[in-house]
Length: 370
Image 1: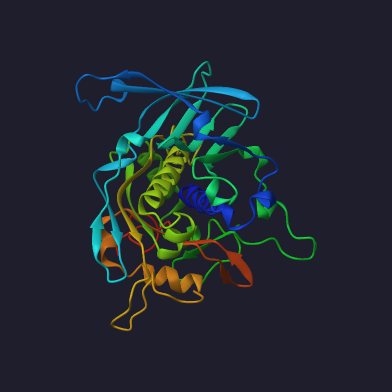
Image 2 (image 1 turned 90 degrees about the vertical axis):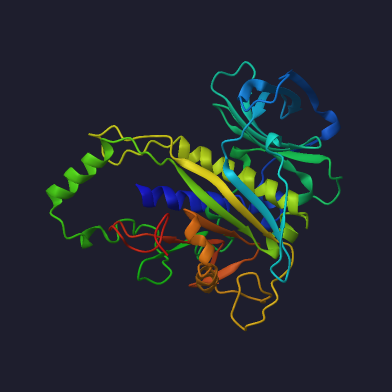
């Protein structure tokens, strides 16, 4: 179950990078809205500073896709760690602290829709986020990532059902294989090309089947005490330039909004590996540190660096170089964001991760020892 969900996370993270191609190739339909078209209203502002979520309530009205949306939003603070820090790093490795406005990250619901959920970032009238309704999910993001004919106050809106994923629509030549979107490295194995190999090491367990099943049942009888995975997010200079428009705060806000969507997937997942046990919910992520490289790292010692200038990286090599950073041991998971296309085993790979063995005390995967 853990492995399946992690692979789903990889696919989600890769799918969010669809902007590598033309928006007209990747969306069946989209609309544009301008920040001036949005109506904002402060419904409640507490007289005293308070961390209570309903101390500050904001309404946002917008019209798109033939619908009027009245969003009731409050600050969302649980996605950021209590000791959250963000840094900009120059080519010499010098870190500069970047202030992040926590109150600009909002969540809430659509007025009149009982089964709705909204995650939104609001910066000077420009919105980035998603509106979840029973029939579809509506996404909003700045237009400059995809369209050059609009100003920085323009946004695009599209429905999730209108996204055309490349793995669902292979090339014109039917004999060409569908592109491999995300790869993963398994302990002691090379880059895998077969996604069906999900139980690859289960038969390596030496314990008796009966004892193994009993142990699984016993584990699920307890409520986990640690439900949040502290993340380190690193954006290299390519991601900073292309997806962050060479703006540190824009890059940071993008990463936070992305992980917020991933967190919802995990938090809503019922971790039930067997029908005879109840399982548990409420597992998710919290961002502890963000590092944004504003320039390529200048190499002095001759050792490779994941943020150095290199025309072409082998995806496995980049993952291994990134994994050498000693600060990773302070986090549950370190994630590098870049903006380049990799090739591996004659297929295109947009993401790669370590997947741990189901055996205990093994390397690779979330929260494993360095």
